[in-house]
Structure formats: structure tokens, C-alpha cells
Length: 442
Picture (cartoon, rainbow, N blue to C red):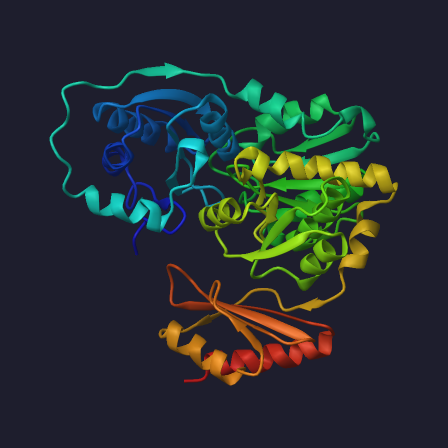
């Protein structure tokens, strides 16, 4: 299986990804996009310093200047590119993957992401046949983006209007640690920080808030400390999951709906997007508050492109990515944190009470089925439910008045992924079993 994926480059170190390969990726990136100056950062993984050096050497050997931004989160890398006017940016990171993994995420000028069809697959082909090196090498200099990024995040709202909250953040020994420590220090809040030390071996748990087992320490701390909110960051801090004051995990589509409601009080008529797996409540809330809803594909590079094209203001993904047009369509986790605190202040209600009205529908959660002929099976589903509203934005979605489902193919494995929602639990279970039997039939 290739490490060159639809959204980034990622594999096990050193067997699948190593210094030699990353050096070639750096060279191919410059050959493909012809940048003059780029920023390069890295995360805290044990293999990241060596891969970072190889990447910088590849880029500079190919004649491009590098600005070393050091240990950063992925949103900080994005910020460095669009805020300071660089031609592109790269970060050595494997995001939420376990410690043996590493990878590279890349953007062009204005932090436009590079995905499979916009450069990654081409770079994969280029690395096996690179030309001779140019005579002139690029230079390396350093830049502190931490302070300007922190200042930027603190401008999302008027901090003086916020109530004094007790907040727990679990940064999982990852890149959310340093920035969270300083960010929450600037708020008038009581801050409890779990696992703040950078440690690429992830000694406490994986840095993936989508897995419930990784949220247990956060849930326990929120309840033990009687906190108002818990926030769990992933490895490169471009995703954040939330826990209410009772320790309950809040699905990210409901967070999107809540933020949409808050935004539409200030900005009437804006377009807000959500991926094809998200609950129907997100669309309901956007429409009820005078906004324009828009469904989008799954995956950060695809969503950002669609947001740009359709001029959306905000977007949320079920995987806990939240995107903001004012941040050049990049992930803006601290924007979402402040919006929630703002809403809790304004309505003077705990988070669980704000979320409760949004728990209107019954969801199956994502269910994977091994299917070799994915396209054929999706066409069979579309034919079986041909009396429904059917669309092919990302996989196949069938919609009825009282239930709907989306079936998407995995980009890298022989799996179809089902997400189904209905007006009642009984109908959800009935339709879930019906659709699964169709998917799994031979």
C-alpha cells in the first residue's frame, strides 16, 4: 500500500518512510511547484528531527529557500504560509497515528492544500526519476510563528466578555501542548492541562480524540474537577474533540451545528458546510437561523477546495476538523473553543443543555464492511433505493423523509463505510441492518 495518500503522505518509519525518501519528496515538491521560499516545521515524534533535516536538505538542494519554523502544530504551519506570504509550507508529522508512523503534509501559497489529485500522486511518480541538482542551493533561516499565531487566535472574540470557566484540555503529549498552555493562560479561566509534555512515544494514550478510549482521562478529569468543558486535541492539533460538564463526549457534527447557530446570530446569510456523514440536524439549524447549508466531501484538502469554490464561511467535519474562511480555509480549533465559551456565556447554560436539543435523530455511527468491488456495490444500492433522493457527491447518499444514509469507499482499503441516520432508534436499527445486508451480500 502506498504512503502517498489522498490528503497527505504517511507511513511507518523507517520501513515505509525514511530520510532518503523524504529528501526526494522535498526535491520533487520544489520541481513540481517552483516555490522560491517555503516554511518547514515538525512535530515531536522521535523520527521527526531526522526527517525534518532530510526534507530541508531536499528542498534547499533543489534551490528553494527554507524558513525553519521549528516545533509547530499543523494550523501553525498553515498560518506561517498565509500570514507571512510564503510560497508554500510543509510539516513533518503523522497527525494522530501511533508513534511508529511519520509523514509529510504540504501546502502551496495561501495555504492551499496539496492532495492526491493536486500534486501528491505526481510527486510519487517524480521521485523515481529526479533530474540533476541545480548549481545554486537555497538558504535556511529561522522564524518564530508561535507568538504571532497565539495573538491571532486570541483575536477571535472579545475575551473580556467571557465568563470565568474551569477548562480541562488533554493534549496527549503532542503539539497542542505548548500552544494550549499559553492560550488558556490568556483567558480568565481555571485551566487544567493533561499530558502537556511533548513525547513522541505517546506514553499516556494515542493522540486521537475520535477513539473513545483516548478520551477517558479527559472525561474523568472533567467530572473530578467539576469543569465546564473538556477539550481533546489530536497529534498535530488540527482537530479537537469536546466533552461536556457531565463527562459526555459530544459528536463533532453537533459542535458544528452549535457553532453555526452562534455564527448566524452575527453573520446573516453566510454559507456553512458539513461533510456527507454529518447529522441532518446541522442542515436544520443552519436553515432555521437563516444560513445557507452545503454538504461537502470528506477530507481536509477536498473540503478546503469546495469551501473556496462555494465561498463558505465555516465548515465542520465529523472527524473534528473545523475550518474557517478567515484563516484561509484552514483548521481553526481555537476559534471553535472560543465560540463555545461565548455561547455558554451568552446563554448562561452548561454545554450539555446547549447540546441536548440537537440530539434529535438516531445515528448508526460509521460501520465498515469489507467489499472488493466497491463501485459495483454502491451502484446496486443506488438502484435498490432508486425512489429516494440519490446523490454521488462522496460515495452514494440516499435520502428519504424519515431516514438517510451515506456509503463511501475507503481511499486506501477494500472497505465501504456506512453512516445512517433516522428519525427514531427503531427505524435506524431496521434500516441499518437492511443496508448492511445489501452491502455484505455477494
